[in-house]
Length: 289
Image (cartoon, rainbow, N blue to C red):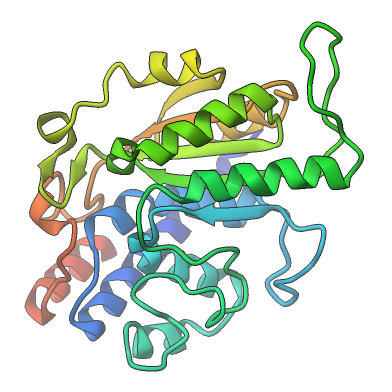
């Protein structure tokens, strides 16, 4: 269980990471704001509490795998990695989206050690995560699970896949979800950043996703809904999913787009826009509080 002390540490760390996101975006002059701020708590929890990983050995064979399908949130992915010790924070702030930089506008695994996949086109990450999780089970001597015989996976690693809610409008997601359910991939944990916006507006107006939980359960997934900004709820959900050996798990994390800066919150126009210098000053001042 998460202690009060560790919860406070994670809250402060997430706020620090949000400030780095703002500084990085302002300096770059372009990039996405709403998604990085809404998913900051989830990624902070993963890197500082849940994941088995070695920042100084990013290719450590026994590490858990984190696949970020919604690559446009890379400002927060890079920021969390920097604060976790993969590379200096200042390197990121100075070079996001710069020509030849390791910190591309969408993650490119050949440019930066520690990235498991390249991502940009939405809807592909879950398929990649399913393939990795299935391969790991095979490599580690596990079997295709048969619920009648009660077989369980022997895989030792967990595969986390971060998804935006709007990319669930992609058909490829549901093909992957169907295969994961069929193979009963208990080593696969998907986390959906349910901030309810996309570049063109609100998800439920553009292409409604609800009833989302029931849809995922129908595909054979163990499903949980949480407040994606409450570290106790995040911890309870992730801890529980690690105990489900005979089903893939999905956490629907209800979040606030642009979380932490009132001017940005729940406004679709901030999906793909970076703050200018004046807006950045206001945002950093609010986050400092």
